[in-house]
Image (cartoon, rainbow, N blue to C red; front, side, top):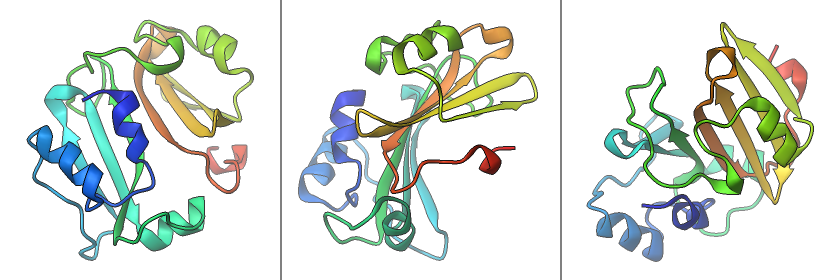
Length: 167
């Protein structure tokens, strides 16, 4: 599985014909369907990837009209480095936008410009860029800016995140 191929399915339910075929080709049988929990995931720990699905209503509220009906919509791809607190192995492929797991926050700012949101969780700094190339990109850096712990890619929401939401 590669980031560029998976992210083409953002905004679609796992039951979409092409998305379903793509998942099946990679041996993934789970298809998120709403069952009382507003979020579901397809977690591929050994591949360093997590596909996050939100309810259709939440997706519409955040991102706008659905392009295809379904109860759970693929809303975010999370990509993990070797050092993370979620138990994922490092994603083995290339990262988008010229990033690597050794990239620092300064390098990310050089690529994306000033972040929309900046927040520090303990020793880790997270930066979010809204509507870069039609996407929202969130990156959590390792302690002392020693590289990337994980990053999330989603379509740009209807409204940008606000700093107050993260403080």
